[in-house]
Length: 402
Image (cartoon, rainbow, N blue to C red; front, side):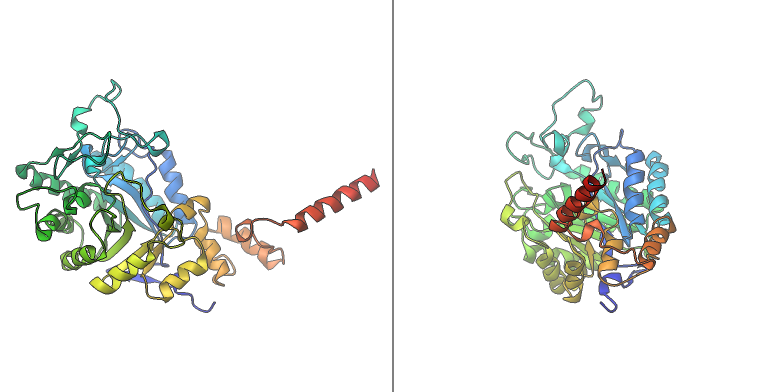
């Protein structure tokens, strides 16, 4: 394919991405007391080395009570800056741009890791700061059956809660990150303030849509006050949350956030409550792409598409259709950390494997140049009948020579 858009550069304020492939924030749940471990260095380093243009570090919590699990990363104290700087450095050293997502779990805090059941934790002596880890929300309404109702934030507490986001943005800048994302989706604190289901306040942060937007927009202002004007700001939204907020409401939110400094909307869905989502929708390639398209056109803002984006030609088609400005490849990057390199080969870009480090590219390029370029394992499920025939022939030859 001549000049695929997937591998064209993208300018976001003063930042230029080498391509339009992002590794989105993916929670790893292995932090120790809020600090990154060696797994994080390996995870983010390999995503950058595999060719992504932008690599986001997972949702990193702006305050202690915002942690979802015992394994969440924190950016709530200055002591977190240096360890997080190592993650930003390894991403940049491997050719990608380093992003980080700021989050607060709100009423979904204090839970088990997904593979432990994703249920609320119970008090144990192993968690000495249990009381400081109290879930909070706009109202005392639980996430779902069996979940403790959060403590509703007092009106007087809200300025400090908002400032926590601003201070987190400052720390992210000092750690060397180049792009920032505000997590305002999936039922977490910011989303719950916007939701009429979760927010039953009667003050200026509840009731009307403008009031329910207020917390999010003030967080954007606090973040932008500490985040340089030349660096891009993303926001993740559940454009269809299956609980009362849909594209129309989120387009209005995006329109309000854009002049305050939001550059890209990361278009996700769901998560407001514990109800089972529409799994039929979740089993379709690119199931969230239409929302990125709607927000892009309706709010006249750049968008990032995410959600079962699996194949190179699929990602290219999304961009060619104008449905989004960049694509985020999440779980498929876990399946193949070199997804971007693989996509370049399939789209006819970089035949010499120059876009990846020479420790990888030299050997793969040499194999291809010598006519040893058999399709790699990522191109087909296997050799099938040909493999069985070859194995049978090898066995016959061996028996004949015995």
